[in-house]
Image (cartoon, rainbow, N blue to C red; front, side):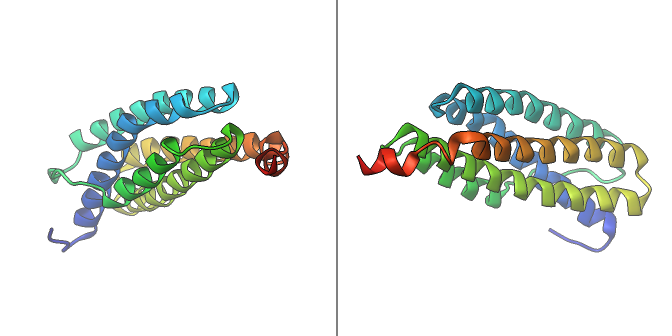
Length: 168
C-alpha cells in the first residue's frame, strides 16, 4: 500500500469498507438465525438487505474513481465477526445471548459508522459529490441500525429479567 495523496487514502478506506461489508453479508444470516427474539431476528435480517445495498453503493463509487481499488481484507471486521461467532456458538440463556448479540452487532455498527464518516469526509474534501451522497446514505443507515439495536435492548431485553433467569 502506498499513501501519497488523499485520493490514495480515500481509495484505501473504500477498499477496507468493501471488504468489511462483504464479510458482513456472509456472517449476518448465521447471526440472525441464532437470535432468540423475533424483533432482533427481523432487525438483523433487514440490516442484511441494507448491507447488500451498501456493497452495491461502494461498487458504484468504484466506477467513478480515477484510481483503481485494490482488493483488501478488513482485519478489523474479521476480528469483530470472530467475537460475534463466539456468541452465536455460546450456550446459555437465550435472552442473555440476544443481549450479547446486540453488543457484538453494535460494535460492528460503531466501526462502520466511524469508517463511513471518514470516507464521506474524504469524498467531500476531494469533490466527489456522488460518492459523498452515497456514503452519507449508508452512514445514515448504519446510525439507524445502531439506534434500533439500542431500542431493542433497552425496550425490554436488558430489563427483562436476564439476571433473574440466569440465577435460577
